[in-house]
Length: 161
Length: 161
Image (cartoon, rainbow over all chains, first blue to last red):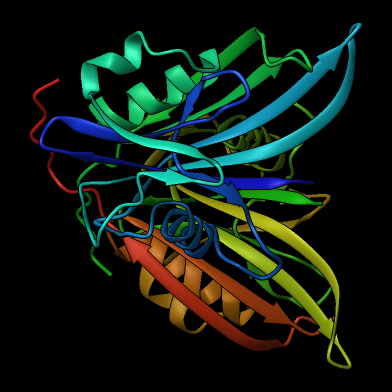
């Protein structure tokens, strides 16, 4: 089963997005986990590879079950781990083999062309406290069929131990 | 790839653990995710099935890459999602087909017999803020070979958007 980790940097009210050439859709930098990596290691490594920069303050914001459905049959299922960071260090590539790297105001996440499930999880990552969970059903052409979402925030704990 | 979700309830300084008959090792209630479930849905469903109770305040505390290594070869890899909750409602089974359900003081997580990687992640879930990530390498008999761990906490964000 495929595992994908991506990472959204939110800094000074702007987010760093990768514009992919195929559909001109925006994504957060990321890619496939390698065997034996933690999801955190994968997100940071992929971000560095795609941007040339190192994220700071990296924290998990979402874990999603991704279902590809064709003619009422599930044809693929994988996991997506979405991280946020609030800073970075290093000079960012402008153009990469994956596409163009661009800063956009956070509010543009509502309007930029992207997969509709990505819109849900990137807006959560940028604007909301806690962690989001859910399942996205897509067509093979990445049209969103349905999504179910949960979220939680950590409560202050008073431990005796 | 297998995906396992488990859930540790921490209430009044005690944790609810399942004592499995095979090795008399303690685990947090949990089990295998089903196709299309979110990790949150799986953790809550498995907890209900194994305990008869419903967790309250469920929140993700750890995501782990699990590697089984035999004679220097990786023979299996899966994902473990560990949740915590700070309360529950309903009457808990005493004994189930999976084993015995027992409350223990949080501090006993350091001493009770269990897989050593579980000790790492359950102590984090019970005692520390934020989210833990990591990779555990085990023998097929669940002796821990090595672990690598990262963690993060959510920083207060000041958004313009």
